[in-house]
Structure formats: structure tokens, C-alpha cells
Length: 116
DNA sequence: GATATGACGTCAT
DNA sequence: CATGACGCCATAT
Image (cartoon, rainbow, N blue to C red; front, side):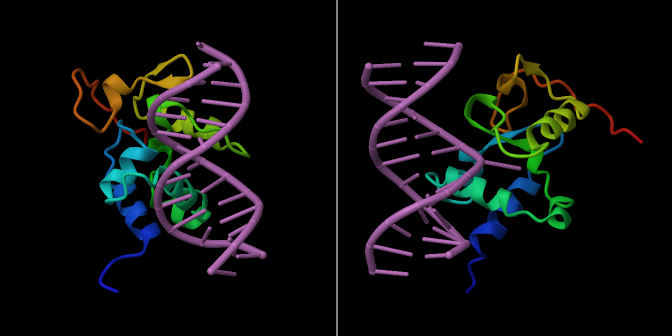
């Protein structure tokens, strides 16, 4: 019991991703101690209800290399829009991980001030 | 408990 | 660089 459910741990890790940065499914998995569970992380995010999605920045989770995982609905498009809105830059269709990965990197553009 | 599914990752082709 | 096959993990049935 003391151990939170897998989904709960995933959501906590995703909430920890700072604005203007992104993490890959694999990195999130590693953060919660399951380095091979990238796929399961996707399952957890997929299970997010619209209500829960309000408190979990799911759009900051991308595929390896900064790719936006294809899926049904307006998801991918919305994700790109949100990331751009917080200052994340893209190289073509993929996020520029060199600048925005949560993992140590070199140059990091300042997150764009929140719209209001 | 066995099988199928999926917002993944990596390697081979 | 585009595809496909496999391996992994947590659920769904």
C-alpha cells in the first residue's frame, strides 16, 4: 500500500515538468523507477479524464527525439499549440530537445511569460 | 491466468 | 530518412 499506484506516480512526475520544457515517455518512466515502462506511461496519459487533464501538463510529454505521438482526435495539434504557447521551439515537426528537454542541456530559451 | 491493446523505444532493413 | 519487427510495461477482457 504505501506505494502509490502507477498512474498516480506518472501524473506526479508529469506535474513536475516545468513550463517551457518537455520530457519523453521514457524519461517519465525512468523518473518513477520503471525505465522500461515508456509504453505504460502512454497508457496512463491516455487514461486521463478531461477533468484530470486540467491538473496534468500532459502536453509536455513527447516521444523519443521530441516527436509528437500520433493519436486520435485533436490531441497532437493541441499539444503543439500549447507547447509553442509556452515558448517551446520546434525543428520541423519535432521539439528541439537540445533546448527544451528536462534533462540537462545547454542553451535554454526562457519560457515565454504566461498569456493572460 | 492467457491474450490483446497501446499517447513507447531501439535496432535492423 | 521511412518502415517494420521486437521487447517492455500496465490494463482490459
